[in-house]
Image (cartoon, rainbow, N blue to C red; front, side, top):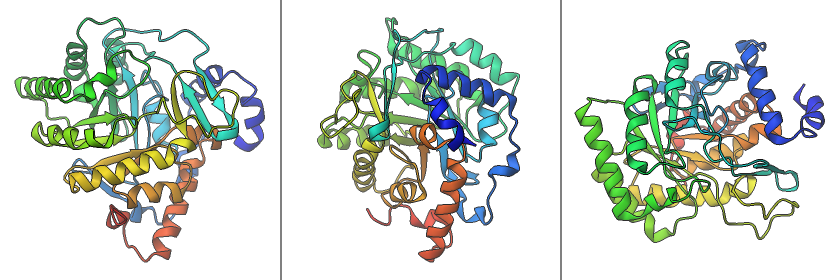
Length: 348
């Protein structure tokens, strides 16, 4: 069905197409059984001490205001991450702000954390409890005077619904956000988060989402702080605002974060490097250019416990999760690996 509809969908403005997808998912008209596959048990993984049916997740950015997470679980995802959610409702940057780079199987976005705010999201999740493993991605408002306070407010408000909370310091579309990769600023942020967790007895795992654009020598410093402040996991990586030289599409020089196939090797290299430095002490969720079983497996071999996709679903449709699961099962059988957990880090 998606193959038939794709030319019509791609004739729409990307943001209009996204809004249409969210509205369609609210009807939840495709049965859950359609996306199930045989032998999926060999894809089960343990993430933050809980078992997931498979390691394929939906990255933050699709369900920004937590509207359709339960419908997304039905597409076969092992987990879904909503957000980025800020304390106050935020409209984001001026339109147009999403661009399809069809010649590159990529996208560029400069959305700017558009979402309906933590209070509304709290009520929405309270009235529609998650039926699967839910991550909640949080960030600061654009006009805030204290970014750390914004993180703490969202942490305090939304932790009760999350299987993990992602601290997003990696978006290129919020001014000053990536400054938190600097050692002193990151140390202060993680210290305040640790104190807030202790003060309010918050047990929710904390995950840090990093930029692919940081230098290799910064990774060791970040790893030290992650271990010092007992961060539970990392997401590698967000979009890149570099790496435009080899792109073909007319939109390649639009300002914003680049995602999709051109990010694949960049994020995989980052995963491999971090896994080597961290020595597998915390789980990595790998993101960037995943659109097949092979590309997902490559991230896992490089050290990722689980993976996330977004742009791949834009180009290949909701059936992509089922296809990746089938392909992963075939790869595991061919390689005589009994469970995908055994493959983590084999190529690092």
